[in-house]
Amino acid sequence: QVQLAESGGGSVQAGGSLRLSCAASEYMYNANCMGWFRQVPGKPRGGVAVIDRIGATKYSSFVKGRFTISKDSAENTLYLQMDSLKPEDTAVYYCAAGKERRACYGANYDYLFSKWGQGTEVTVSS
Image (cartoon, rainbow, N blue to C red; front, side, top):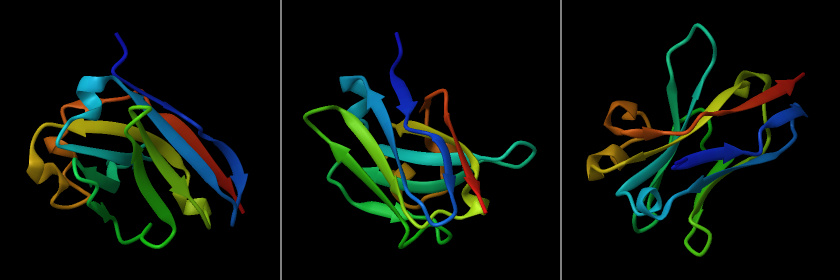
């Protein structure tokens, strides 16, 4: 049973936008913290943005002001709106859910997330 499923990745030119979606089971959606992370092959996974149960958000410095994380309670769906995309945003983006509240104390506590999606690839060309 798939618990987290990302979609919305693709190719876009620099300056463009994409919206990623993460369909979650009800159990996952009600986790204390949900987030988006990304990874470039050969590099460590990095945090992008997190959102807690009540909707408070935190962002990594390199996406703040360009990306927006949000949730749709009716659809059990997590979103990542990505605007003003740059070539360095090229990566596989993962949705994750964590039980611990402290997972949302910052955008880089990936080790506190226990459930992960399969990822969706984003390519930004210059």
